[in-house]
Length: 193
Image (cartoon, rainbow, N blue to C red; front, top):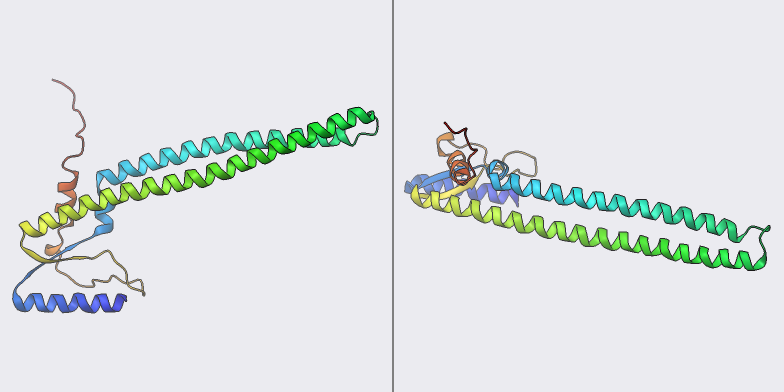
């Protein structure tokens, strides 16, 4: 598939040269990395993941305490020094403690699955917003610059080689796209004079 795409890119370039069409190149990986909204989204997702990690730590602490309690009660239920009624009470308490352990394990499993699903959903949503912004700016810049084709030079072939091997650096509009996307980023406040 990559070979076909590379071949098509070459064909487009040859056709464009023959028809004197303008061609531009962008590095989508770099644009995505350097777009300020990507860093904001990454920070947000990292904060959410850290909050989940802290809560999971609390759940695991509760689980370990419940397991220790269940082991202690289970040991008491087998203690021959206790009367039959005391061992029965200890066995009932051990069963209740084991039920609590199972409940916490279930809570951990549900929380982990739900939290991971939510984080993936939010990540995809933010990624889609960022990609839409990038595509909109590339399309705007292509129309303004009268570019017939815009190729991504960040892609890799199956041999891990760039899919676009040679292109004039002057046709790379990545810097202009990044500059325009980041133009609306909040400017740091300078000291008042």
